[in-house]
Image 1 (cartoon, rainbow, N blue to C red):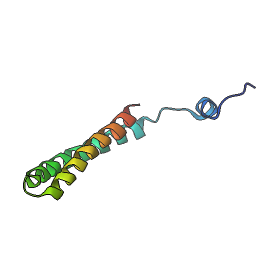
Image 2 (cartoon, rainbow, N blue to C red):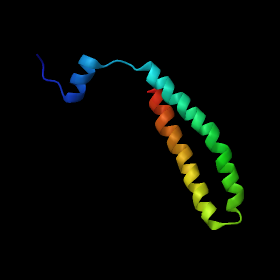
Image 3 (tube, one colour):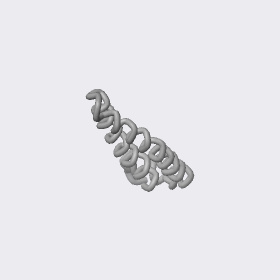
Image 4 (cartoon, rainbow, N blue to C red):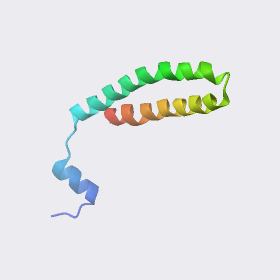
Length: 77
């Protein structure tokens, strides 16, 4: 038998595409994005008056991008 690296061995013996898990990841990310955007918009209007909301708004934007990157792309791949 040929010597495989651990990742190649696992992929060769157990590798299978997990379509259900991929679709679940995409659906969960889409639902979270739809719920997150109105909250971020509400925080934006408060950010004009209070500086702590500016930080929360920035963290919300970072979270939206991270959620899109991690969940949506993870589900596609």
